[in-house]
Image 1 (cartoon, rainbow, N blue to C red):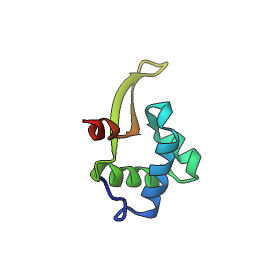
Image 2 (image 1 turned 180 degrees about the vertical axis):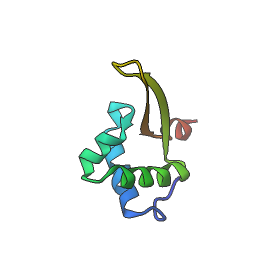
Image 3 (image 1 turned 30 degrees about the vertical axis):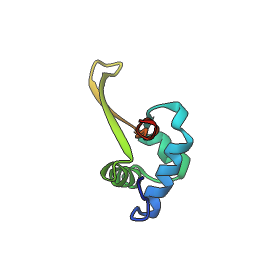
Image 4 (image 1 turned 90 degrees about the horizontal axis):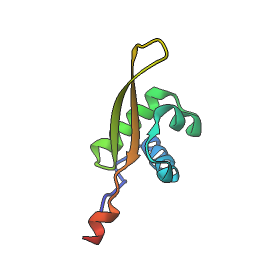
Length: 87
C-alpha cells in the first residue's frame, strides 16, 4: 500500500484530480491546470512528486502540427494498482 503522508498539498490536489479523471485515460498538464487553477510549473512539480512516489506514470508523444513541425506532448495518469492487489 502506498502512503501519501510525505506528499505536498499540491501533489495531493493533483492526485485527486487524476483520480477524478481516471476514466478519461491519459490527461495533459493543461487539463489539470484548468481543473485546479494552478500554473504548469506547479502541476509539473506535483506530478514529479507523484511519479517519484510510484503513483503516476507519464507518456510522451511527438506529433506534427499543421505546419509540419514536431510538437512534444506529455500525458499523465495514475498507476493502476488494482491488478496487483488481485494477484
